[in-house]
Length: 443
DNA sequence: TATGATGATTGGCC
DNA sequence: GGCCAATCATCATA
Image (cartoon, rainbow, N blue to C red):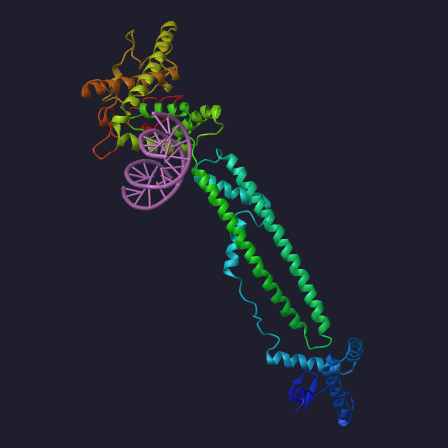
C-alpha cells in the first residue's frame, strides 16, 4: 500500500460538522445536488492529496505554484477541517501541552518577595519599607543612614537590572510568539493547523519563557537576599559610644544604683542627651533601644563583677556629689538672698518624700531650714535630691564596709535582683523631680 | 596579634 | 513586652 492510499484509508469514517468522510473522502454537505457528483468530489480529494504528497518533490517555484493552486482549491477548507479533526483526535496537536495549570506556588513566593523587597511593583516605598523594617529591628533607624542609602542604591541597581532583563525577556517572548504565530498561520495553508493549536503553541512558548522569567526572578531574589544579609551583618558593626554619652549613662546608672531601671521617658531623655553629645562628634544618634541595651549590659556586668566597678561607682558618686553640692550651694545662696515666698508657690514642684523611713526628711541646710520647706527652684530641688541620695549611699556604705567604696553590693538581693537594703528604692529616686529624667522607681 | 571592653543579638523566662 | 544571661562580633589597646 502506498503512502497516499494509507492516508486515504486513515481518513475513513471521520465525521465532522458539515462534512462527511466516506471511504477516505471528505464530502461537503450536499448543496442541492445528489450523490451523482460524488465521484467528481472523490476525484478532487484524491487529487489534492496527491498534490500534497508530491509537493516536497517539486522545485520551489513549482511548489509555490502548486501551493497557490491548492489554497484556491474549492475542497481545501473541507480537507483542512478533516485533517485538523484527525490531529485533534489522535492527540498530536496537544502533545506536551498541559491545560491551564494552576499558578506555580514558587513563582508566587518569588513574586511576593520581590514585591515586599521593593524590586517588583511601584518603585517608591517597597525598598525603603524593607530598609525601615531592618532598621527598626536593629533599633537604630537613623544612625545607619549611610548604610541605608548604600542599601537603597544597591537595591535600586538590582531593581533596574531586573526590570531591564524582564523587559528584554518579554520583548523576546512577544517577538518569538509573533514569529511562531505567523509561521503557523502561514503553514496552516499547507498543513492542518487549527487556530486552537496555534493558541496552544503560544501558551507553550509563554510557559517556556515564564520559566526563564522564573530563573530571573530567582536570581534577583538571591541577589536581594545577599544584599540584605550583608546589610544586616553591617548592623552588627558597632561604634563605641562617645565618652560623654557613656558618662551620661553611667551617671544615671550609679545615681540610680538602687534601681537602675530607667523608665521609657528616662530612656528617651537619656537617648536625647547622649545623642546631643554624640552628634557633636560622630554625627549619629543614640536610640532608646541602645539605651536599653546599655542598661541591660551594664546591670549584668555590674552584677557579675561588682568589685571591678567599685572604682567607677565611686568616681561617678563623687562627681554627682560635687555637682549636687554646687547646686545646693547655689540654691542656699539663692534662698538667702531672696525673701521667702508664699508657702504654696513651690509646693507643686517640690519632691514629695515618703513620710516613713526617709532619712532626708530632717535634712537641713546650713541655716537650719528644712529643704522640704525651702522655696527653691525645680532644678535646684532636683540637685538637692541627688545630693541627698549620694549622701545616703555614702552613709549607708560607711556603716557596712568602712569607707572604701560608696556603693554596697547589698543593693543586690539574694536572688540577684536590685533591692537596696538601705534605701527604699520605690520611694527614693534621687534625680526625680521636675526637669530631671524619671526613673521607674517613681512608679 | 592577643586580649579585654563593649554594643548588639538571641533565646528563655515571667 | 521587658529583663536576664549567654553569646557574638567588633573596637581599642598593650
